[in-house]
Length: 432
Ligand code: IMP
Image (cartoon, rainbow, N blue to C red; front, side, top):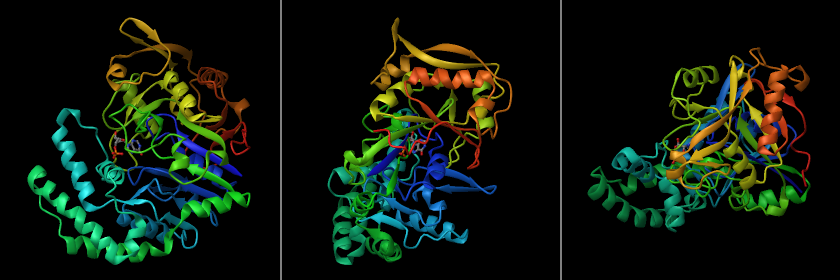
């Protein structure tokens, strides 16, 4: 059995899509385990840019099986649109894309609640992607969610939808003061979606179990990142799912015993979209420079990302929470022009020096970063494929991060293309 979890160590957008795409060649199955179409994984193939939101990034390798696990919330219209776009670009998904029958559906009222409740929150808004993700997970936990499998049974789907709309429409009318949803309209639309996604619906927990039993290699693809995890992120400024490595088990139905390694993906600096504390954020020209050099605009919403220096306190926390066995460092080339590169090694909070990540978002907001300055390399690392060819200051930077985080760097991404990478060790080689 061999399962490698690929997890974001920051606030998402670490470049997991590229890393998954790279590793998928050596794996048999790629399983996305949480989140929804709030995520956006960008892949550059033959000069062409592809963005996938729900379908695992492994889809770009012919013959690889891709799974959307039970922990994902699925907007069927978004999934069908993605399948169509892939088809138009000559990427066949039939017979190799499977969606869990247990995954929960995003319904039109989830999207409405997401948008309206953000408006009502005012300055306390989370800055969600507005895709209905949070409200869909609320219904799942409240035990009124509708699952993908329910779509295949018209009577059952209608019964559940009708019951939910009774309450939801009351909310629309009296709390948000927006139009009600029409049962027949939603029913018909979703029945159409149901027919179209039926060929992909499967008991994916069983599929994964069988694949692992046959000795196949499975990659578990996390969306967002550790600091957006609903339990371990900067709550309440988080997404509503288990983005950490533990989620790979509950969100796919695979035993922890099947996991042989956890690869953490980290950018050589840090970004965040949406609201919430961000100790190393740079609200100056340098932050702007990182945004431009790194193309730091949301793959899903196009929003400019907030940018800052690498936070080793947060990364060490991610190493602990996820049990990282390796690190993939991405976008090293964005730092190529910096005279000095800074790494946050501790925080100052109420006169004390803190070396462990802070659990409360309120306290994290008050934390001042303590930096260690390293000399920059002022040379291009773009597209480099061997560690020895990196400028010595860049090598020192990587080695320093490794020491601070306490996890070996196995991959360094030096550009957007598939082959722009330095491989120090194979993350798929079982770490335990
Ligand atoms: P939601 O997931 O749409 O509910 O948004 C909750 C928070 O997570 C917001 O701050 C979003 O900007 C952030 N978020 C959600 N998905 C992503 C992602 O894929 N990358 C980065 N941030 C994300």
